Image (cartoon, rainbow, N blue to C red; front, side, top):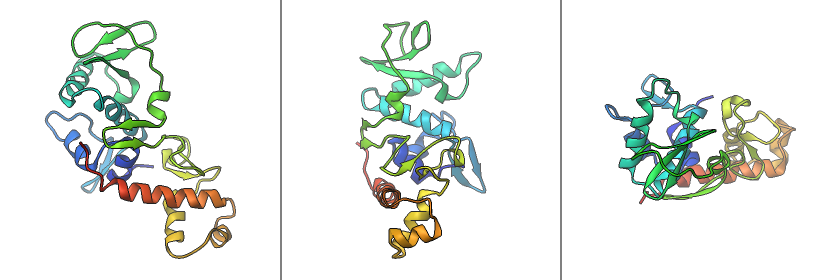
Length: 207
């Protein structure tokens, strides 16, 4: 399952305009893994990487983030950006590995403790509060092994936007459960709330 630009923006903490700038060649920060017929589609790995960038951007300039990513790309065995744990340390960026920490902007620097939970959990970005990735709203779940990480109703494979669309058509939770018995009432309210969040997020203006 791939993510649209609007959904990627809402889950990453960036704006759609920023995503467009970040994928623009020749110095793209991150080029989406998917896309066809002129449509841009992001992968789950892209989303993790973009959340990292969005979290760093609150403390570090975009110029330094670009420099850090460029330096990483010069590694002989560079992999997808989502494979790297990057944390802000003063005015620089540290790449934290199991046994060492590397300053990828200036020089080898002081190690800081960082966990993937920093990226997966809720955090304050420069566009405001970014929802937690695993549970963006009560009753919803994002799991890369279920529909490729597309947001679904918890304990189901039902996409959130399917339920939100039915609710927008005037169906209450009981009627929706007639079509999807495994969808709970909190799942319906969560789908509606998240759909509204995605819609409203697109109108935010990044600082």
